[in-house]
Length: 307
Image 1 (cartoon, rainbow, N blue to C red):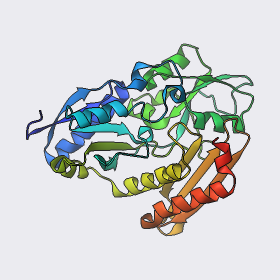
Image 2: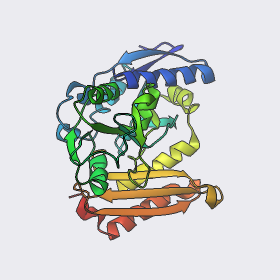
Image 3: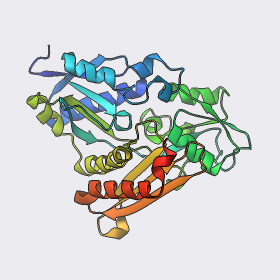
Image 4: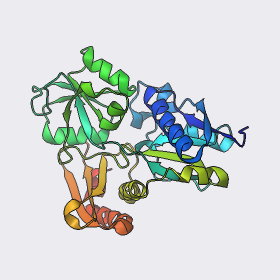
């Protein structure tokens, strides 16, 4: 059981997950004085690092075990990469804080000086994501895309050992682990729109645990929380899960008087068909904009690309 002075933080055992949980613990200590104790939790996605995520189950493969630990009372809060958290959260759990969003772009891990454009025809590129694969096929249908599993440091090592010519992964994890020297190319959003919530951390706890909710709420970044809520609302309105070829990004739009720009994309898995939507709204209207853009995408045929 927890003590009044110490909160138990649940985390996956990967280097990135533990780094992220440590940053949350550090922020809690600085802002509230709360002490934490790390509890390692093994998830289905960690135990099976061979099969593609959609084959394992897609939704919740990195989060269900942490949520089960919350319900069992063995941890008091869980730290997730927000992009891994399903859009449907049970009523007995809440996310009082979303914060610490790092660069949401995807990056190319390859030999120095390599770009997506300069990769030779037929180059072997690893990705674990249908979203990334579809967008890669849209701009480089000549590439050979291969399945890729493993933690961030494992994926970087596979390129350095020559198992792949390149891999595409989220910038945030690479930067957080101090592996930025492995980045050969930052992929622009026009080429590779990110997963909803990519780069942000979500802190989850039991809805009934009011004391912990209040402590965790001190970490919340309202702008990041609402922006990622909008991205996830776009995904949810389309009926897509974490493994679907759906992308969304909400970010401040300097030219629109403080409004946010929200971009969404739905792709066919072969990359031959892309539906793009785009709009601007103030922060308070961003989630409503996401739902309107999702309907625009549906009207343009997005649902047929997801079947």
